[in-house]
Image 1 (cartoon, rainbow, N blue to C red):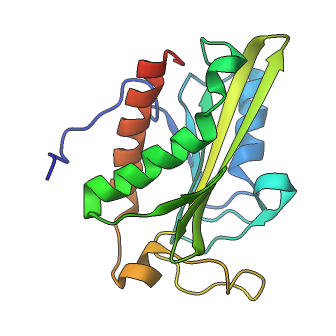
Image 2: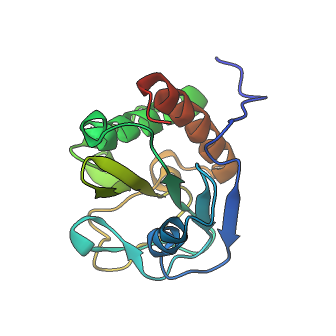
Length: 193
């Protein structure tokens, strides 16, 4: 088992902006990125997202103080072409982080879903704003069902969580920290930040 302690990032997640409740971390992150009022790697994170956005403008449901719901703001120093595999790579980093921490193997349904037993446990929403070939900013929204056990009727048959599947409570901060540490390593290796 790898050492879990002392995993600190240099850029990603150094600045965290927490909201007890917010409409959407993605929308708030977009506002801040447009204003250029926050540093590279800032995370907008909430305990309760009431109008979460999934892919194709679908709604992302979450239970209060049960899951991980956040958006990372990045000002990349690379071209758009370098981000071709970004969404699937983020999914790999997240599933690898869970394996590192708990030895559980989650699956990936391309292009952006984290799954287990055929049900959706998480989703990734990447949005790039650019001018020509130059990227102004990149937003990475992640919703990951950690300790939620009740789901509304619309998603009850297709959604799941870590707690539902593995029948125990998980530390959301531990998962977030592992993911951020591994994700920053990936971004640095690829020359994105």
